Every structure is written in structure tokens, then in C-alpha cells.
Amino acid sequence: MVTENQIWQWLEEVTDPEIPVLTVVDLGVVRHVDLEHDHPIVKITPTYSGCPAMNEIEQNIKAKLKDEGLDNVEVQTVLSPPWTTDWMTEKGKQKLKEYGIAPPEGSSADKSVLFGKAKEVQCPNCGSRKTQMVSQFGSTACKALYKCEDCLEPFDYFKCI
Image (tube, rainbow, N blue to C red; front, side, top):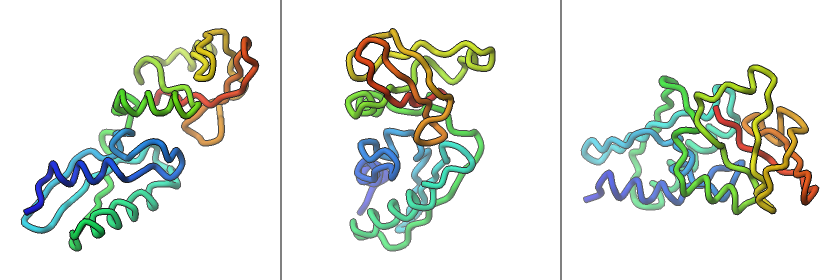
């Protein structure tokens, strides 16, 4: 008999299509797992309402659980409450840093960017805090582009949302 805990363990193997070092559990996208008899229901919340990866994430969740012998899987998208970087795991933030993307710093309650003040972000390459935001928008909408003034390397910063 499959348990909810087993399903959570399997979901730890489903990666984010945009940042493959992160799992959907690391990101905090998987909000809840219900197991009604042999009918698992996985509830997910998109990182933002227009996230193009959500359909692929849903399909990957279904495929992983089917590979584990579960045929009757339902994935539900839940929009409220909205996703926040506060839901990311510390393990996920460390994986981002090791991958070369600065993880979100602080909490989603930090609204300093609204007042024109760029966040001081630690460079994931050399650890310097002498960094400068180049663009509010990076390779995806959830990231900003920064440059380190010490090692001169550009890097993405996963914004607090």
C-alpha cells in the first residue's frame, strides 16, 4: 500500500524544467498530497500566474507517479494562497547557489525594490556582496540579472516573490 510519505519521496525526484537542479518539492510548488484509496491528488501552486512550466510540471508529476505504479493520479492547481519564495526549502536555496543562481534573500515581505532600492545580493561565484543589478528581469520572469563588481561575473538572482 502506497503512503502519502512515499508519494512525497517520489516527488523529490521531479525536477523543475527551468532549473533542473531543483525539485518541485524544493521550490515549494507541491502544496499538498491527498491519498484517497488508490487515487492520489497532488495540489500544486504556480510560482506565478503565467508560469509556462506548470503544464510540464503537472505532466512530469503524473509520469513519475505512473512509473511508480500509480495510474489514477490527479494534479490540481491551487492559486490561493499565491506561491512565495518563502515556501522554498533551505536545501533548494543551497542547490541554487551551487548551480550559480543567487537564492532569494530575506522574505517575500521585503518590498524595498518598490522604492527603487536594489537588493544587495551575494555573488554565488565568489561570495562578494559588491554586486549590482543590471536588469530587474533575468533569464526568466522570476529572476533578476546581477553583476559582481569583484569577480565581474554576471549571475541570476532568484527574486523574492
